[in-house]
Length: 428
Image 1 (cartoon, rainbow, N blue to C red):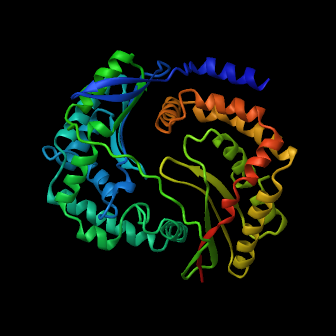
Image 2: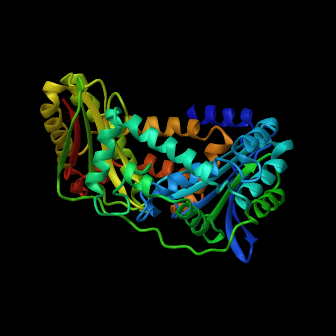
């Protein structure tokens, strides 16, 4: 019945599910191109994604990747920030730049009839970034203001302190936005050099699709990438999570305790058993009500409104991460209970009922994650980028459906490292 409903929905929405990975040659470099044609709506989108160019590449300048993306959002030197933004608005074009941990992204969206213009503006932006002291000072002021605002965001503080704890002395051991000290030491030339060495052809992957043909997509990609230098790529490092259970506490004027926790998870992005980690994490803490964390911490003890734990599996790092909020007087009890829940989970595994419920939810919700073009393109990109192979997510559903209780519990028992929990607490 469920499969029939999914099929009907897909037919009604005109979903083609035909994303592919091609190549486009630009400046003597073969750039991977993820493409899907979808004529459901007269729209088009493109992402220029640069590998190993996010915050993991900040090096000696904490926050420089994020700063560089924000500076590119200030338009071109010729038109200035306001002039460039006005041009985009007048043509209903969305063009923005942002970073993640591993990637630097230039993103374009527009109606099909305006997409060619959007490509032109992308080319203008990459040819003539607003490398002026005025734009630089504006971005610095905004970044410093944001850092000050975050000083009273206790969830952010707990999350950041956990990151600094478990990735200390690694390329991830700093705030993505940077610090007041690192931003005050930053120079315009530093940002120019960062963009010039990271926003390059050798690091590029194009993700493009919508109301266009493959040949049109290739032409758009070549045009947008044409201003870029060939540059060079570097292998993305794999960062090890702290394996010695530790704890960091921040004292703030708060009425409740914010508890964030993390543990190493020895699974790489292309691990053939990552689908088991998805099911295990869902049962442990990612599934909301019904998950072990929620049942033990909220339902049975009433120690928190919510409690979560998720598996984060990436190319550069993997971990089990979670968080909860609780009363000040029950923070120690909640921390102890998190450890007990994880320990019991590793030692005893899951029940047949938990496995069946997880299978039903995952298979039933998967179509909702691929309703629109951007979701499908992102899925195909991640399959390619993480080395999973095209069509992995469909295979994953099939593997999950066939997963036995014995295999899952053996997998869980083999990952005792998730007991090596570190905690970050913001408390009174």
